[in-house]
Image (spheres, rainbow over the protein chains, first blue to last red):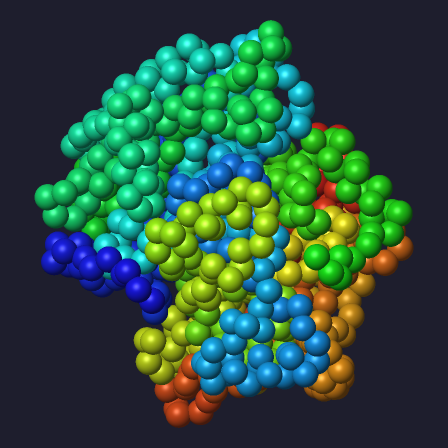
Length: 309
Length: 309
């Protein structure tokens, strides 16, 4: 496959150490890892910590599978912004001779893409995406807005890399707010402060930065500049491996993007705006490991007590 | 899409009721559902119940993402048996003009399959599959064999259906045993009895049956007959919607299939055999709902106390 990002020596060393300490299990694919129970337990503690942090939001919790309707992603115009990140699920619709041919080619690892046809599913790139049509299906958004927590879903971004902080499959926890523009913007900004404070309690050294999404190509550079000029995306970064910190959480204001696409309206008739927090649970776990060491049982007692409560 | 299974009136009624009671959230794809937190909470209680049931196995726990290496599935000869169930992930590898074309077609829901290329990942069809190469990478299997619990991973089977018990994406809990032939076979048979007893305690009416996998085509009929003749697969069925019970758990003896493919050998040099239990967590949850009602809080106190302990 083309375009596999190389890792810095620090990133490769961190990946090696994670495997040696029995935290990650390598696959033959860059950026695709199995996890030991020790690592998964830490990730679930991070997940529980986040559930507790925003308990006072009384968010409606929903859960979605790691695949979503292809048509929905098309409707969201995701293909215009991130064509390189999408995973589209193809399937075999052939007959008996076709199946026999496929079996022979597959067993020999020979090409058989022509035997497959595009299906109606894609791998979900963001846990919040199925939320907007589900809320839109209920009719007008109540005056106070709605807050939805779609849980610790798996997401996929096709970004093969040897940097363990850039996984292709990971758990993206999100919190979604849909409501009036001024409300949604203030909500996002308040959460920027609250999460920085919470991560600091856990011993992370943080940098808060204006950011942009990894839009494709030259046209994408213009979209990125616009996104920054309008301060639509902020990121909290923490060190994982080497001097460059990695984004562990993003704070995103979508304006009326999803409101328009899914016909989300407030009860007073205005178009609804939306924002979401996007929290990479594996990256938070990796940042904690970078701060406190590969021996999870040897972490500072205060951090252990905080997460394993 | 072709081949969407229709539901019986009972199955369609059960699906309607699940949606009306706020347990499932429909998508536009048959067999792909979002879940309310009430349903997901029940599924996690089922998951915890299973962890407790086999605590005395002291299984090594591992966790894997919902995508796996395509080459690994090919090596397992899955394409020869179940070509119709596979989801293969395709991606966009094109240039800037290609991306512009893709964006226009996708936004208009026009065909664009030719713009995509086959990638190196498939959607995982069984949570135990990544276990065998991970164990093989460690060298010979210890004399006493190994038991692995790969957790509550998401799996995919392309079986679009309006029967809510036949989801395309669901959580398949598995327990895997790799060891000497006689040990592995006895292990599987003992678990058949233990799980039937545990499900009975939870108020399910069960049928235990010899079964076969849904092999493709006419050739598959022969494979199915062989599988039954050798008693390689048993299933526990429970009623969900209508008179036909649905398999909630399977007990599978693979003989030396995975041992041969991944070079799994015992320390004494013999080829390792393997078996697995496959537990459909959503189906167990649905069977419990069918037995005790859509109002989860109104379930018999003994069942509530057992699951929500």
